Amino acid sequence: AQSVTQPDIHITVSEGASLELRCNYSYGATPYLFWYVQSPGQGLQLLLKYFSGDTLVQGIKGFEAEFKRSQSSFNLRKPSVHWSDAAEYFCAVGARGSSASKIIFGSGTRLSIRP
Amino acid sequence: KAGVTQTPRYLIKTRGQQVTLSCSPISGHRSVSWYQQTPGQGLQFLFEYFSETQRNKGNFPGRFSGRQFSNSRSEMNVSTLELGDSALYLCASRGTGEIHEQYFGPGTRLTVT
Image 1 (cartoon, rainbow over the protein chains, first blue to last red):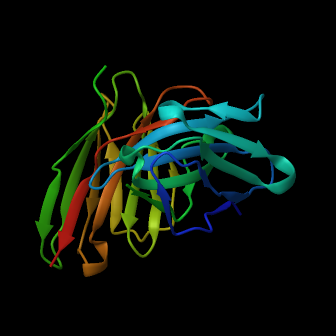
Image 2: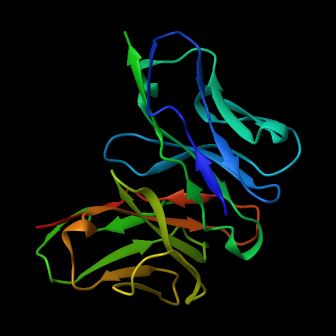
Image 3: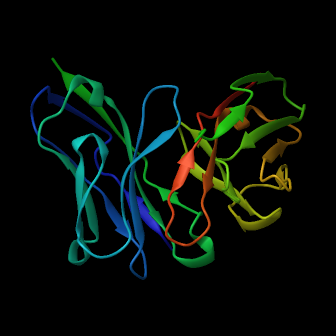
């Protein structure tokens, strides 16, 4: 069965510091992979996605993620965080084909920014 | 292009009542999915509708149901509400074709007392 693990529940980084949020997935084939961000009281915004091809994907707001098949990982990175990046981040995996909308989400990582 | 809209944004209901939530997808999107988000269970897939037919379903009891209209707008209904149904209900729409991401609405916050 598909599953997503985000091992870090809460991370605090200083403004201007680099960021890496971890994500490991379990899926029988090559999945679709996503990172979403959710600000308090808001819906989910897609940061980036991986479907195929180049394993390093660029997203919005300066985020990037690298798909590593051998490690079943899809970690999110940002070289320098801004106070506005404080939010909850969700890694997600989706199937291919007719079940593509049935996304499985990780439990989320809450990011706090230290001034 | 307007985004996904959900109404109402906030709702308070009493145990045993039923509730209907509405979702209008992005224009041209025919797939609408519903998710429940709670602090304890996180984000869980409820069901997906495509061209007025339920295409995928998550592991929720039959009290949770939905439908989709010919204009792709979707409604979700929860009957006999329980305290545990208090959650943020998110709707997402997706374009036609396999390689399309989902776009989420702001959600409906349901509180059951």
